Image (cartoon, rainbow, N blue to C red):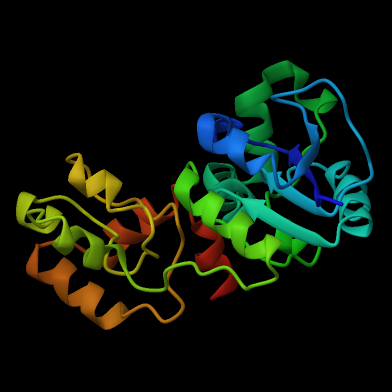
Length: 246
């Protein structure tokens, strides 16, 4: 029997699931090897009988916890996809402010009706088997991960910095343009998409396992920038790393 696959969404824009749908012809080939049994963005049918669960979105409500635990109980493999699910993503920014203040700012007089708490990634609530980082995920990387999982092989996610891909692309360093760029410490795999299109890396794929922090500091100093400049930019997508490394 073909493995049964389910997609679930929590607090997110659902752009990572859209990236999967946009695979189009490649997705049609993929479904010849798997059965998609739950995918709210693409189908109306739903089932609690699945082998692999892909989860998009961060955990922002108490009600998310039992739902996640049920997914973990049902699935043989749980794979968070995208920055929100892997590191808390943009939603994690609220953790650097007083929660009551943020709730009132967002919801106004209706704040008391909304169940929300400090944002956390999926792995902070349940054990996960693998992660696919990015905002959104790289569709080709998603395909590669699925194929690896289907044959029982550990998927490979790059563990070198975006700077490597940037140099391969022949880009002018963003620091030479006076911009803060997190490519020196951010996990590659995106093809240096942002720098290649004129914007500094914002760290949506999270840190490499052993980031060269000293080298990053040297680059910042040479460019007349500070560590705080980099930290503020890193909080856009990956503030979770700052919290867990305190």
